[in-house]
Length: 374
Image (cartoon, rainbow, N blue to C red; front, side, top):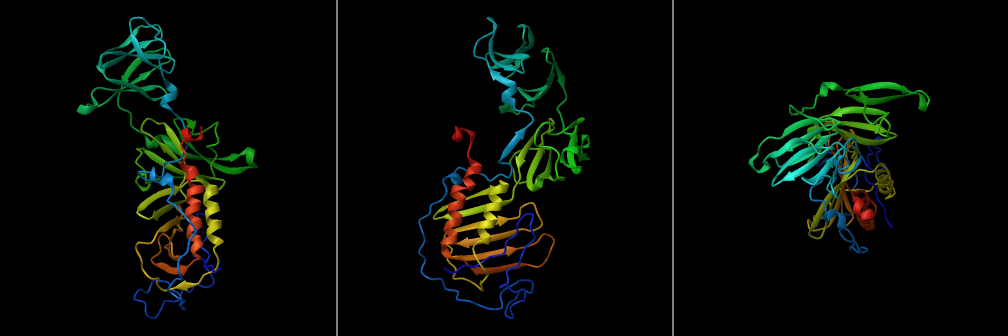
């Protein structure tokens, strides 16, 4: 069985060039910055005979790829602050929800109001159609969403009193990165995010980071709306710490790479957000063998393909596009460099099948919902 090896770039490992790949430009090339091989091998593949493979089912369920798809912690869950009322506490009111052991939401026609724990009316049910908590001490109240009427906001206390307040806005100036020495880790220097006088994630495993940096929100591929996003690293693993306008924060697994896959007429894509899975994938790619570059394969756009982008979040981005006939186009374009480094190589045809099956059996674990595990 003949094997060939493409350039790989791990997020934390410098690119290692294969011995069989040359940095000399081909004399017939029109692009002076394109790296090609000085020798050419057979460019016509043998008859393709592959093991059976199928398009991963979980990819069909991903309507929109999102970098913030793997949440590991949240400072605020509305569901834990607002529970359904199963037994009516007061005979004169129809209560629907109980908020933070302090306030009952009651219903009168299409409107909703608030009662304290004694059954006294705190807010009449004549203005708002929806009342939900948006942080541990704040409520958002909606009038008529269909008419685009702005929401109102109220703070509340444990005793059940409320007070109208201005719409909250995230204050980036109140958040800063602190540095300290960890006594638990032999004097190692660690970093944390301080917000509102508190250490974000204190008391959980999501603090005492090896590295933290604020990243522009527009650089993160997500449909979620956050006011500020930080990228943090700990023991080699990456995370995103995201703040909303109310000061709540969510922690997500970071992104290490992206997979795009076409099988037949079906296309899908997803991010790689598990550090161990990413390490397993790079080891798998390295096991495919030694370089043997070719200039250009026979082009068949109907072929199935898998594209793997490696090194997301780093300065070493490598994209490998492997078609079902074994041809692989590697594009290694270091951030900030003008030189384009692209080349074709030929892999054993079963390498394509192995990668599709890895996506189906391993990567799918990252997209299993809590309901599916019960």
